[in-house]
Length: 193
Image (cartoon, rainbow, N blue to C red; front, side, top):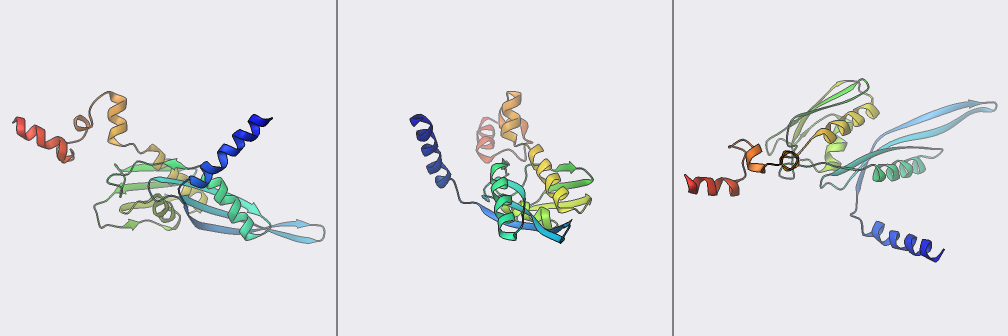
């Protein structure tokens, strides 16, 4: 019994030491249930949470009051976070497409200074992720739940050159085109020639 209490005691400081997350309320719905005496109203909230350094998650919560629904959604979003590799800490490594149900999202890398060109729910995901330059388009469903799920699906598909090189047993410089190769790798090759 003492061991269990000790383990639980070790978990709390880790949660407090975790990086502070930013959150964005994407959608809130008022839902009603008809009962014998009339209607009972509740609220459903959709929240996106991220550390703006490459981690993002979304959650949905339902409750009788709005603040409680937002709190539940935020907790769920923190539990379901994914890590996304960003190129230069500002954009995606390559163009990617995400799908969920009738929702389809196309995301493209962009040069510095482009900004976030995206619709409502997608913009929230990119801002919480820490992306600064991206061009995206929603094709299909405009339902915020499906748009966010499709965006997360696309982001999960994205891979960095480091991951691809590691999986294939090669160096990062071998995988990138010569014009994309890091300057540090290009300098020794120029010296050899």
